[in-house]
Amino acid sequence: RSMGMIQDITEIKQAEAELLSSRRKLSMALENGSIGIWEWNMETDELATDHRAAEMFGLDPGGGKRTFSDLQGMIFEEDLAHFKTAVSDCERRKLPLETLFRINRGNGKPRTVSVRAMMIGSCNGDPAILSGVAFDLTEFCERTDMVISKLNKELLRSNKELEDFAYIASHDLQEPLRMVSSFTQLLAMQYGEKLDDRAREYIEYAVNGARRMYDLLNDLLSYSRVNTKGEAFSRTDLQEILEIVMQNLSLTISERQASVSAGRLPVVSADRNQMIQLLQNLVSNSIKFSAGEPRIFVSAETGNGCHVISVKDEGIGIDPVYFDRIFKIFKRLHHKDEYEGTGVGLAICKRIVERHGGTITVKSEPGKGATFSFTIPC
Image (cartoon, rainbow, N blue to C red; front, side):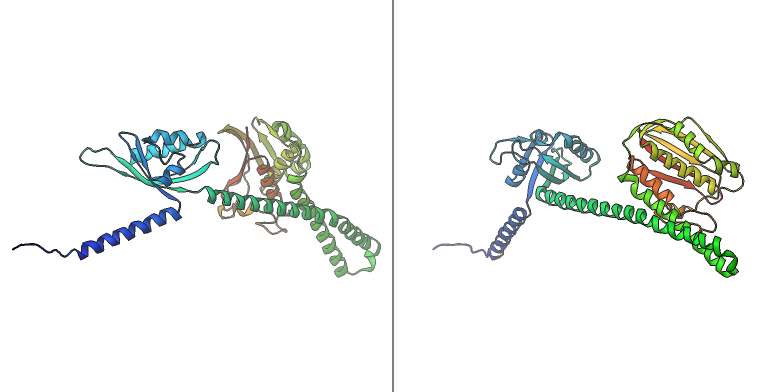
């Protein structure tokens, strides 16, 4: 006789089949998604990878024992410091690792790789393991660069066409506008006695409108010329520039009994004529928006690789909610009957500063004056 045992392993076989199916699905997902798997033993420096991660890292998939140092040797020198900092932060602060770097494959095409990993530590003294995945982003980055390059070309072309249009429109409209203004004034001079008060009032409206339009076209012409008609940068003494500005504004300064004082201003590499235009706009604005006898202060500081030039007044000030608006073209905070101007001056200032690689900002409160500051690289 014989004795035996029967065991129902249906569930075990089903579990094995499900596990095998899951592994196949995972392998397909990793393959189709260009995702590699890697682990770094932080004590032995040993680096374990699957064939996808090895290929991304520029390592021989069939090679022998590999180390984390081998991987670092394949990373572009420009990206290595950033990579080491990310790994150091992960070790020190126990945060997930997430960084991007380029792999130097010798004569082959460089690869752009993104890695993400988690620190796996053990309470029993086993070495910590950094375990994660790697993504090959080379083709994605190439396509992105192509799209960005195409968009930049389109933007440059569009900006060039817009600048050309602004120049042509403002330049070609000036002559007929001068004729309208001149003949309207001539009409008033020769036939003024034959016209009633309302007719003379209408003529005055026409002349004033033509004058405002002429000023607007001039400012638009200046705005369009900042980049297209700018001169080469040269050694420019801003102290001398401020003296020229004060001579240009001498009549306004005298009429308003304004005072303009300044500390020592630096010598910079800049477009001389645009520096005159920039400082003249800022000083003129400070005088315009000051009550009584305006007091203007021009100062300079140097730090963090740039000069900071500030023009401060004690005028009516600006509400902070309008700080972004005032540097946009044709944006005015006051009606033309209160303060003359076209709303282009500060937009021109911003464009000049940006052409010189700097930024322009304002600090102000209503009733407490305003300080406009712009930077120019040293």
